[in-house]
Image 1: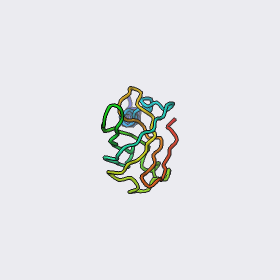
Image 2 (image 1 turned 45 degrees about the horizontal axis):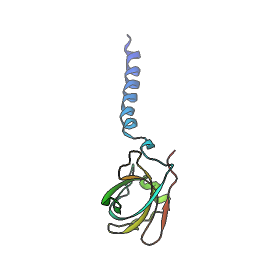
Image 3 (image 1 turned 90 degrees about the vertical axis):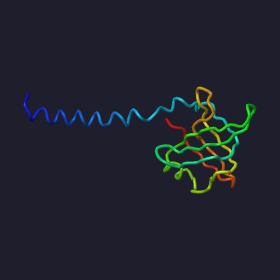
Image 4 (image 1 turned 30 degrees about the vertical axis):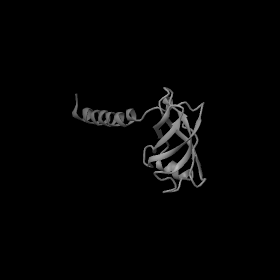
Amino acid sequence: MNRHVLAPAAISLAAMLSMAAPLAAHHSAAIFNFRAPVTKEGTVKAIKVVNPHTHMLLSITDAKGTRDWDFEGHSASNFYRAGFVRDSVKVGDKISITYAPMQNGADGGYIVAFTTTGGAKVGFAPPP
């Protein structure tokens, strides 16, 4: 084959392959049940408002005892757009969280809304 034909083909192939890894790395929201949101109260053990997803670790007490629950949420920019204010949620704060539970019943879920100790409510539309 001609070198002038192979070079563009090789560049196109390299570009397509470089996009495959990031696309495969992002998971589906199908692991969460957005049709049956749940609200619980818990104590914040950790919060990371970062991209691509914010994470909150809450200590929650229910009929099964006290356990750490891991919650995932929207990106940092979506948190701020929804009304989140930096330092409005700190480790040790008691908050109320509404979330889409895990389809498999594991402790945790996707953050739909939460209310801070100070009474500020931050809410999100579920992902498509």
